[in-house]
Length: 249
Image (cartoon, rainbow, N blue to C red; front, side, top):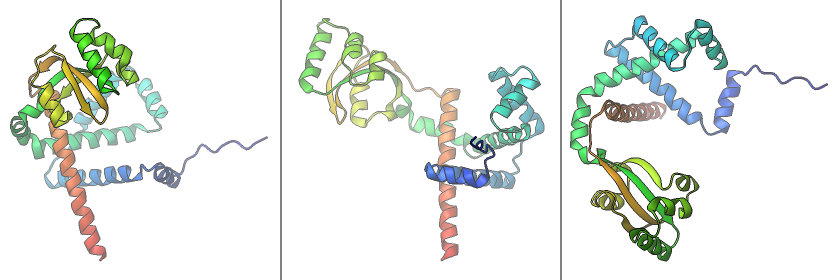
């Protein structure tokens, strides 16, 4: 009879596994980010209360439909973490959010209005095919009403997932598009088919269903805040690495 596999995992094994999967650098950076957050928050007198942790834990339990304490304990056990580990994680996330607000909340509106055009969106559909002649034929067939855009996308698009969605790409920010594509897409009226457009991917037929004006919603506010905070963390890490390098020389 074979000996059973030992299910106890040592910390060194986890580190070696992360290295083998090329994930160690990301984890290492996140650990340093957390140190920076704790250090700067302490310098600025930012803290998280037990009440705030409890409120956030209650919200998480509701989101995961963990109605009873036993449900929560069972879920945590399945995640291989203790209730104490969970509270530490909640504390870290709340502290990170508070620090981000302290550092950049006053800058979010300024960044948004300075880059307002970039935050415009379109509800975009597209078809991509390999050959220019075929793209032209599809363009004329759709224009003449011989086939609908959505049916053509379902039949002929190069990408399987986009075929299933009949060409639907979703809500796309202007900044997420290549500048030359954005210029064409945002200057063409909604529902009007755009003639074949060549990129490295192939020949595109674009159609905008709707233009969505830039609006500083709570989601967009948080997105801008997070981006600013992540850039700041990356800069802090870079400074620490350069300082450490100087110390070793």
